[in-house]
Image (tube, rainbow, N blue to C red; front, side, top):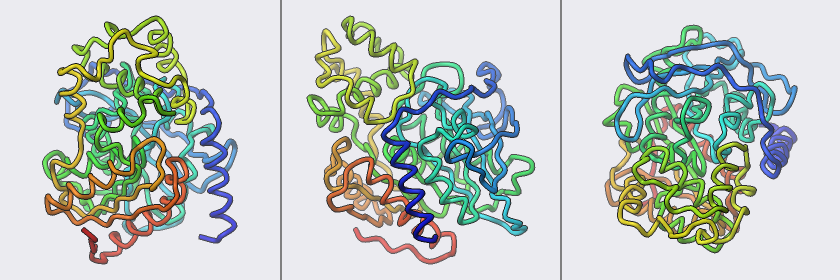
Length: 388
């Protein structure tokens, strides 16, 4: 990529990252009750558009889709997303990246698919780097973000299903030019890193027919309890509450409402109805005790559920590129290193990359091109070398 274009891309991503995500028009919703069929089956599809910035043209064709997936509890659901294909005249097979975005908020208008037509989805510039390479991209909105119900933010198994089923849906989408043998890459950072990493662990049991070549994930919150402890009293306390809301959405028997004070109820309502970039959500308050009458994270049922989203207990069956900023202020660097150690101990092929003197948001930007380069090598058939 020419250096001026790359600088423009990075600047644009940075500008979007430090501003609020603008509300966007909602796509048509799917009927979540109509859950017959197989995971990855398309429920609805409609033409849409992909713009990294407001009004910025791209040489792509895009579809808004709703597709069948599976909740963390194993029940069928419907998730929305977007499939983007370059209009580059390519007639042969092209790779597909199933891309998982980081934290955008919990309101339906925060869904990536809602922002793409208006150029307000923060990671669209990073996604455009993939389409410049000639790759198709499927972007899940995750469970409950753009479809009925609350967003299951940080619920790993739900996210992993949504990522894999977005790839299945893209391969089945008429007009996309993809097929069962299409090489697939998995990519994501932060919440998207958790989702992509879960997809990597679930691939062999949940979607083994997908021709996955590798997974590139960064800034991964692989241990939610350790991440919550790190952020309690830190700048990321607001993200703990978002995660609690997400877990409660997947597991309503946790009864989050019993633990909230008036301030907590106010912030839960705020989070459910606004789009906030990660820095805004992180700075709402300083300690979880500010918004609760009792900390639910110390309760056995909450700890059991949070641990069920931990990564590192099963080796991905395809190679992984894993990266993390050494001064990440939201997801502890030690959590990323431990995921590498756990996967290595399980026998996975892991290429680990530390990003020196790099924080969380800057890690998403600086790590994106090397991660895509690594995926390009996998698509080209080059053998993956780990550094366990």
